[in-house]
Image 1: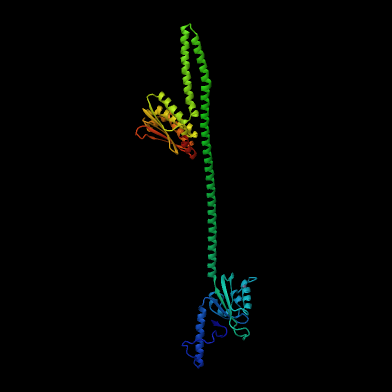
Image 2 (image 1 turned 60 degrees about the vertical axis):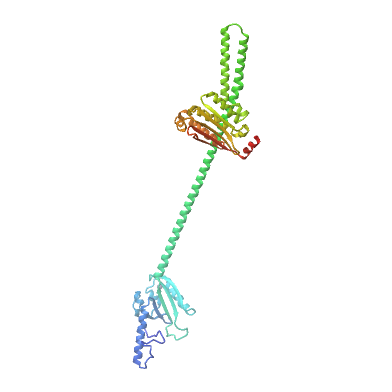
Length: 436
Ligand SMILES: [Zn+2]
C-alpha cells in the first residue's frame, strides 16, 4: 500500500527474525520500513480493491488494484471518497452506487461490517462491497475509521446469469416437451375414440347384416311354406276335383273308344301332374317339418333322395327323434341336409353317401360323408355348378344359429366329409331327458 501519511495497520509489525526490536533507532526504522514494504506487497497482491477510510469517508490508503481497475494512479485516489474513485465522472441521477455507499456508511455506526452487492453499469462490473469499522466511535478523529473492501464478482454474476438462462431454457424445453406430449396424448385419445367409434359402427353394421340375413332366410322359409300350402291346398284340390270329374265321365260314358282312350290318357297325365305338384310342394317346405319335426323331415328327405337317385346308395344313421332337435335348429338342420345331399348328387360322383344325425348332452351333430371325387375335384367345377354358394349358405346358416360348419376329406381317404355342429344351451340340454 502506498501511503499518504504513515499509518500502521498492525500494532506489532513482525520483524524478519521475530526477535525483540533493538534499541538502535536506525535499525528500528529499517525494520519498520521492511515490515511496511512486505505488508504493502501482500495487500497489493490481493484481487480486491482495499481502501482505508477516514472519519469523512475519504481514502487515506489504497492498494494497487486501483491501477489494475484503471481508476487512475495511487496518489490520485488519495483524499477522494469511494464513489468519486469508482465513478470519476458520474452522470447517473440517482447513482445506485452512491446511494448504496451512503446508506452503508451511515449504517456503520450501528452495524459492523456492512455488506452489499450491486451491478455497476458505469464500471461494467458486479461489486461486492464490505465496509468494516476499524476503531470504536468516539476515538481520535485523525485515526482511520473504516476499511472498504470492494470485490469484483462479475464472473460470479455472469455464472449465475448463465445458470439462470440455462434454467429458463431448460424450463422452456420441458414446457415445450410437456405440451408436445400432451398434444400427442390428445391425438392418441382422439385416435382411440375414433377407432372405438369405427369398431362400434362396424359391430353395429355386422349385427344389422346378420339380422337382415336371418330375416331374409326366415322370410324365404315363410314364403316357401305359404307357396307349398297354396299348391297343395288350392291347386292340388282343384286338380283332384278335375280328375274326379273326368273319372266320373269316363265311367258313365260307353260309346266311342277314341274318346274313352283320350279321357284315360288325360286322367293319367293329370295324376302325373298332381304327383309332380306334390313333389314341388314337398321340396319347397315339407309339411312334415312343421307337423312332426326335423328328424322326420330328414328321414323323409332321405327316402325321397334314395328314390330319386337309385344309383347312389344312401345310409341313414339317425339316432335321435324329433323332440331332441331344438325347434330353433329344425329348419337349419333340414335345409343343411337338403343342400349337402343335393351337392353330393350333383358334383361328388359318389356311389355311397352316409347321413349321421346324432346328439350328446350338449351338442347336436349332422355329418354327411361320401366316397366321391373329393374336395379338390368338386371345388374345380364348384363355381360353374354353384356349389360354392351352397357351401357359403351352409356356413352362414350354421353361424347364424350358433353352430360351426367344416368341410374336409372323408376319414376313409376318399370323398368328402361335411360336418355341422351346434352347442346346445342348458334349457335345450334338458329337452333330451324330457324326450327320453
Ligand atoms: Zn456514481
